[in-house]
Image (cartoon, rainbow, N blue to C red; front, side, top):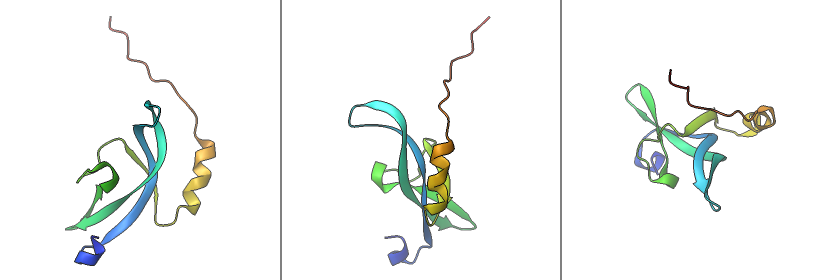
Length: 86
């Protein structure tokens, strides 16, 4: 829609941290858009109704997804724990 309105836009794909179906928070494959504003690009996500995509979005690539799909097999699961307070 941005392009139809004359606003430069491009597709972005990667991972998003969200809760789907079974309500288990996890990283999921996702696609969103970036629109050009001035000299910069702003991530927007109409799927999640976010005029500015939040920090749950991890960009793996832009345009074709072919190059990024191979990265998924190289991802490792890590556990983050809060640092113990002294």
